[in-house]
Every structure is written in C-alpha cells, then in structure tokens.
Image (cartoon, rainbow, N blue to C red; front, top):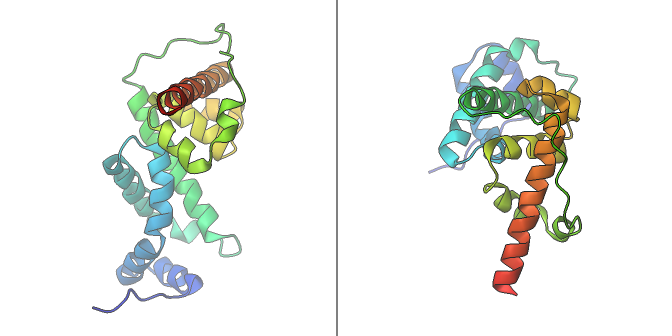
Length: 184
C-alpha cells in the first residue's frame, strides 16, 4: 500500500474550491488529525468529536468559496471547528438546567495547583468537568476568547461565564489535590 499522497496546501484548496470530491477527500485526510485534536477538546468522547469534525469539514467545503487564500487555512478551519463544536454544545445545553449565576461569587482555592501541570495533564483532567465548564474553560483558557464573546456564543450572561470558569478551575484543583494525595 502506498503512503498517503501529500499535495501542497494551496493546490488542495484551489481544487476544493472547484468542488473536486477527490481533493476534498485529500484535504480531509491531510487535516483530520489537526481537526480531531480541536474536536476532542470540546467533546466528551471520540464519537462526539468525530461528529463535530465531520460537520465542520462539510461546512468548510460548502463555504470554501468564502475562504481568503491570503489568510492561513488552518486558522480558518480551526474557527469553523470551534464554532461547530460550540453550536453542538449550545444544542446540548438547551436540555440541561442552567441556573442563573449572576450573583454567585467565584470559587477561590489554591491557585498554584494548576500551574504545576503540563497541557496534556490538564486536557486529561478536563474530561471530568461538567459540559458547560469544559466548554467555557476551552474557550477562555485555550482558545483565548473573552467572557463577553463566550457569553454571546453560549447565550449566557458574561458573569455566568466567569463563574463557570472559576468553578471549572476549582474542580480541576480538587481533582489535582485528590490525585496528589492518592499518589503522594
């Protein structure tokens, strides 16, 4: 069996803009790993991540005509994947009880506990967070969105975004503390 054909990114994109299914498949294969890395951060399991990735690629192929070739393709694709994951999460959140957190004080704890972890440790621990906390932690800490932007994406008040982020960090600290005590 031959190794997968590696075609220059600009040629892939140019051919995808013409609607070539062959080149869409090649683009999918070339960026699948990158896309899954993003999808997994926003999903509770691999199947959900795969749905996000597939939906995102469909959106990317359908809007390829809007892609500006002067901009980095990965950044454009990343935005589509994140937005697709958020859209999916927003649908899931409709079925969860969302308590108004405007007046709830942020939780405080040992702030230094999380500083001693590497990225992979944090990504593994994040899977234990409730869905809303996982989503907000990803958007704020990893993808760099501010609370006002997150509030707009998830249709929640910015103050709720802050509280959910604080609670996510507090839960991560408790998990870390528990792990440290169990292994220390």
